[in-house]
Image (cartoon, rainbow, N blue to C red):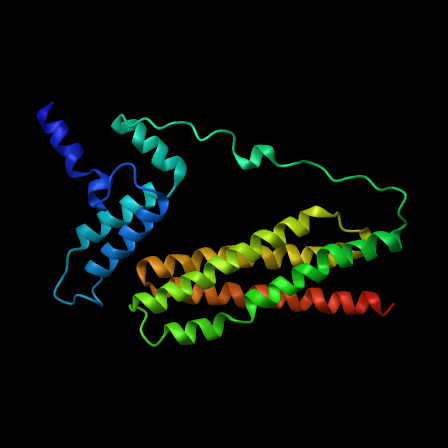
Length: 236
């Protein structure tokens, strides 16, 4: 039993990240970032501890995922109070039926309540990444510059979340199905891009940065397709 206990202590993810088992998600992220910087070869050329990096990455992978963390906590005998019903289960389903609107009225409503606000948000998200990366390039390991970049990603997440609400708020008319499809794929690319760029802020791996930029490019392409399709439709 003693050997088993010792082994658990050695592989305890909380100890690996040097945090308590009650640490909030933000603390988990902050601890991981600090350790990655501590052990990253670009910052510490004299360190060559691949086992430590692997343990740190594994610990963050588990503790940053709510479901994986919950399962891991149960394996350690840690009990937490229930968080209550998730917001997802409280979300309203279905759209209000407004069959009295004709096709032109439905399109006009969708254009004003969905297309216009979403395209404004897309502009704010997509048109500023290059400037943000240029500013960060001065010194990616500067905490202040990285915090500015993280603030930008937080703004992107907020805009993306609002765009999703608008997108789901009003069903697209049949005439705008193609445009809605372009917007859908644009938003998906942005969501994936945000995650890739967020990984870069955690481990400073340029591959995530380049993948995020490519997803941004894909999203921008879908935005252009949506705008062109809208112009063609309105010119009919």
